[in-house]
Image (spheres, rainbow, N blue to C red):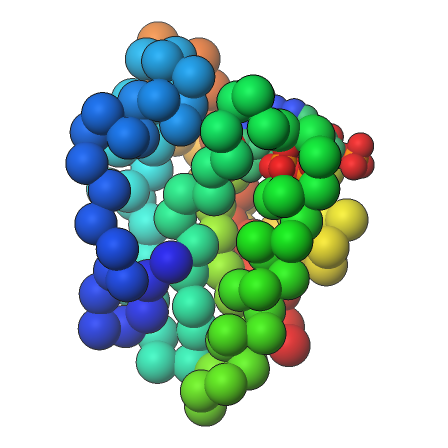
Length: 128
Ligand SMILES: CC(C)(COP(=O)(O)OP(=O)(O)OC[C@H]1O[C@@H](n2cnc3c(N)ncnc32)[C@H](O)[C@@H]1OP(=O)(O)O)[C@@H](O)C(=O)NCCC(=O)NCCS
């Protein structure tokens, strides 16, 4: 997670790689969307990225982490959680919609990201 002051925890490349299951296109996708993503405002917490160990996925941990992020966000003068997801990550997008995120901006990135396997980034927000 990060706020307007910066990241709460720095993630090294190996951790990121393990989190994305070693899939290089996903890491490239992540790096590219970082270049595009908007500046974080003082009323928001940005989740970037959400990763659950591949062996533990599908057991509700991602949902619990998101709910914890919502609770934390409400402890400050913040009312918004934001994140981004690429168009090929349909399962993650479905999860985010299930917990209340809405797409607020759709950005075509295909010229830069087509070879990384995606062409659109969805910026999503949940108002608290
Ligand atoms: C996306 C992610 C964080 C979700 O965490 P999780 O603990 O598996 O999520 P939950 O168990 O709480 O929820 C599962 C839901 O997420 C969706 N999902 C997304 N990716 C999934 C995966 N790899 N395995 C299982 N479910 C996944 C399922 O569709 C499921 O929806 P449903 O409950 O309506 O059937 C996790 O799958 C992950 O780390 N994926 C790889 C990294 C990634 O792509 N992160 C998102 C970057 S924007």
